[in-house]
Length: 87
Image 1 (cartoon, one colour):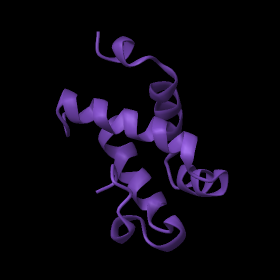
Image 2: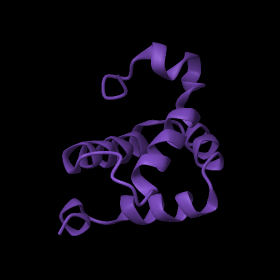
Image 3: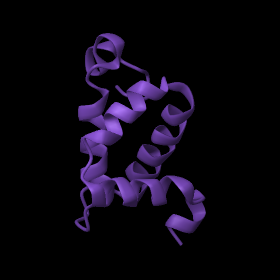
């Protein structure tokens, strides 16, 4: 749903995106295997694309809901090349 920018999921003016980002943070930053490697790659690529396309105010609102550790880890994950993450 997020890959196709579903309005039901994101809400008007992306009001639900911070909650979605929080879920992504939990899945990507926890040390438990909550997603397959393929799903994790898709999530990372999706977040990278959203960083380029969403208004900055929406992104900052979403980042503000993350735990400090999640924020640091996601920032690190998103700054690495995909191959470096999974090698």
